[in-house]
Length: 302
Image (cartoon, rainbow, N blue to C red; front, side, top):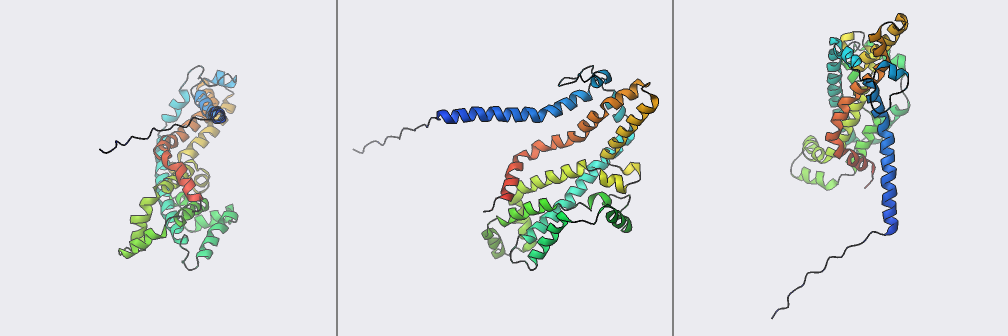
């Protein structure tokens, strides 16, 4: 009669005292870091909903004092705000799309060690990290090629970030060569291999680069301030910058006699920060799961 096989009793490893102490300290430290990081954001939001008197007295901390939405009402009642907000969305989407296409194809090309002139193309990219033509030559160039007062003045000059390029290059270099060799045996060319094999396996780094580029273009204002003269073409960051300057000037000229303008001037910076950062905060949770793995995979040499 066959002997009945007994299942091995699972063993559990108890955490040592030192590990438990480390875990507690780690949780406390990270909680403190999180609190320190979130405090400025909470304070900004509280100030954006507070009244002028409490803000000037420095009595606003984490909870709004004298709840007031006058500044939000003033900003959102202006039709130009929504026109410029739409411009920012268009500029960000178009610029990020162009940047991702150029960065991905450039990084994929220079990741191939058998590419002729590979070192030259890498050197050209790295050279631009340390040297550039300067503000005046850039302005003359943009004006000479007819980009002034067009979307292209915003989306083209910063289309490739060399840092993002090098991260993607390192990521592509770490991919197994066997994948592309198998694709070549199946009859796929270079472009079809990139589209069907490489990109689907690169979702993490692509999502990370999309976040980097989108945040950069969304927050950018100096390019528009420099190259755009038509207020209807401004991104929302330039609109809000002008609103801050206008509210401060108007308050100084009026001597504080206008309660509405005084209220706007007192928390206009807080309101503009909230309105500017809100879309990016809403976008981040959707790609957060790719964020850490995308950066790490692109920076670790296999």
